[in-house]
Length: 224
Image (cartoon, rainbow, N blue to C red; front, top):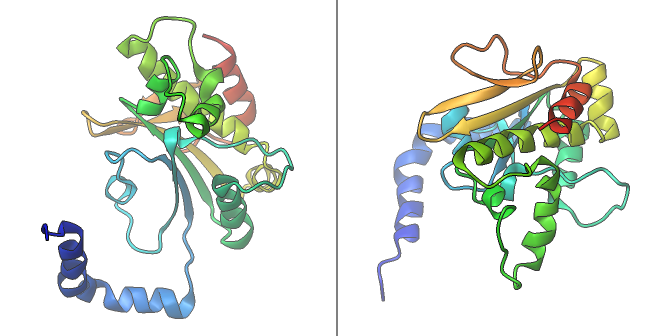
């Protein structure tokens, strides 16, 4: 039989890594999880939330999907993992931060400018959640970068359509964070509430969007 590298990695985790975190994991079992951040990120393998934020076990409640998209709150009560995770994070876990993190060279964003396999019906429908961020231009590297950032802002606006999120943001219990990770730079650009642009985290004054997210998001998406 061929070597099973995943099995070997599982064994290494149990024998080498887990002993260093044994007490921490036991505490998380005994006391339950209390993450302070809901991290909505793209499924791309190059985006590593724990590495990016320096978080440890129990600190991030993760949602990963193609494009880091947020479905609208429409009261349909359908089977939707991302919407369910948002509700659980806000109502049950009472997180204090929600991060939407897109990234450079996003395949999902690029796919919105091209043809999609006729077999990928779920993907085609899912990408509709980012269409409002698409620019009426050819998909140049600059256009794709701008679309990736606009898509992040679009999801922030959509988050404010969730009553429990809107209420918590307005009450000051939750802050929203729009990030764009540029893989080749190792730099995260954060959505700046003051001018509706993305600013490198290395010089930004805050990682959050501020209290007026919905208006600024609408304005940022409305203009090309």
